[in-house]
Structures are given as structure tokens and as C-alpha cells.
Length: 325
Image 1: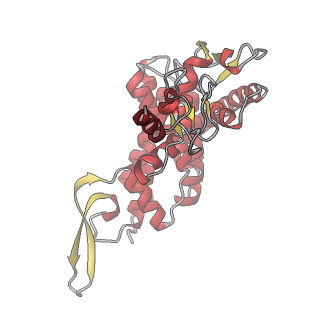
Image 2 (image 1 turned 180 degrees about the vertical axis):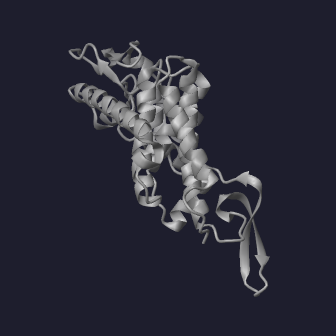
Image 3 (image 1 turned 45 degrees about the vertical axis):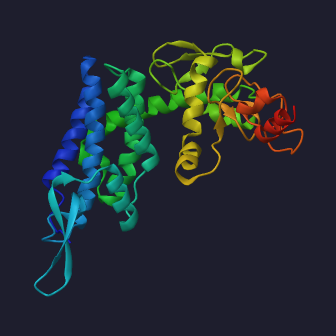
């Protein structure tokens, strides 16, 4: 095993990136906000790689860090594996190594941080204070357990007193805001369990923050709801944000149906024209519309959106009826 101490260059770079990211997040210059997100994300990745470096056998050319691996027979005739080239392992490669080696990391929070980073880099020129708070909150969740459990250190001593104190303070502010927003959202009456689950994925149409609250809770139908973002102040209607939330809520099931086979959870809605119709419940999660014809009048098979114009028949029996005519 690599016995190099904890002051490796990789670790130094990881700590420096996180420190710089936190410093950027405190700047009044909005242009530095995106730099803050990039640096914090990069620093966490480097910490992950540092843990892999620590486990690399001597003479393996840091095999666990490399994207390419070659096999080689040693002088003793044993098979060894060595790293090849300079390209390092990507996020999925790190996840695979961590799983096989029993290394723990909060991937749920890391993936949320990665999504924030992607969204900010592709769609925004700067990050709002609420977005930066969320970045720091997700980063705190990832860093605390990983530094303590996997790097046998303390975040405060590794990252510095000022850096860690600021991250904790911003995390506390964000968590309070998020709790307030979730309490407000929980008071809404959702017409179905499926839509209640989707509500957890609703976010601001402008900055994508989850810090949104309803501004007109006393409505006849959820489709009449309006929301306000406590991060950037944007006001938006339910119809503006529900489709993105549905896509996110059912991303996993949709992906599995596409890769492993099976029926997708969502279908095209004949009423609003979006792929937001929940097949199992028989209701559109965006406009709340339902099918007029649920099953074929002849064979009783379930009818989808594309068969509604066949007046209660499946494609086969509609075709057979047309032939008879």
C-alpha cells in the first residue's frame, strides 16, 4: 500500500481548491460565484482521489487513479496491475472503486452538488446567494463524513477554522430556509400520492432553487397554484414548473424502462400535449386530465393516450372493425 503521508500534493490541491471556492463564495463579485462552485466540486473530487491514492500499491503507477490499466508480470511471476497514461478516473470510475473497496461517500449529496454545478455552468452567468448556500450545504454533508471516516481527520483542522466555520454557517441558513419552505409545501393538499411525490422536486424556474413557497394556497385545484422563490424572488405558476419536476421525479424509472425494457411510467397526455401522463394512476400529473377510455370494449386491455381516438377500442379491434365495414 502507498505509505506516503497525508501531506501529499493531491491532498494539498484538494484543500486549496475548497478553500479558494469558499473564498470565492464570500466575494461581492458575482463573477466569482461560478468559480466558487467549480472549485468546491473539484476539491471534493480530489479528496476522493486522494483516498484512492492512499490505497494504491507501491510501484503501480497509482493504478486506482488512472483511466487505463495494464497487466504486467512481476519478477516473482505474479500478475500485477499498473496505471497507464495521464488521464485519471472519472466520477463513475471513482464510484466503482469505492463500491468494490468499501469506501463510503454520500453520493446522494454529491450527485445533487454535481447537478447544481452543471445547471449553473450551462444556464447561468453567476450564482445567487441561495444557490451558493445550497452548494455549501451539499458540500458540507459530503465532506464531514468523508474527511472523518475515510481520511481520519477533522474538517476544521484539514480545511481551516475560517473555511469550515463559514460553510457550517451557510449550511445552517440554507437548512432553516429549506425547512420553512417544506413546511409551507406540506400544508398543500395534493390530489394524489403521485403528485405529492412530484411536489418534492418542484424548483424555481429561474434559479432552480428548491426554496419556493406557495403564494395562494387557498385554491380550488393545484393547477391554479402560484409560487415564489425565496432565493431570487421569481414568481411562477404551477404549470411553469411541474413538467421539470415530473421529469426529475420519474427519471430513474424512465431510464430503467429504456435500458432494461418494460413500460415507461409516463405517457403523452392528449389534453396538454406533454409527456406527463402517469400510466399506472391513469392521470396526467401536469394538467390532471384523464383518459375517457381506460380499456378496450372488446378485449379489456388497457388503452394508452395514442388509442383514445379509437373510441374505446384497442388498435387491433379497431382495425378488425374497420375491415368488417
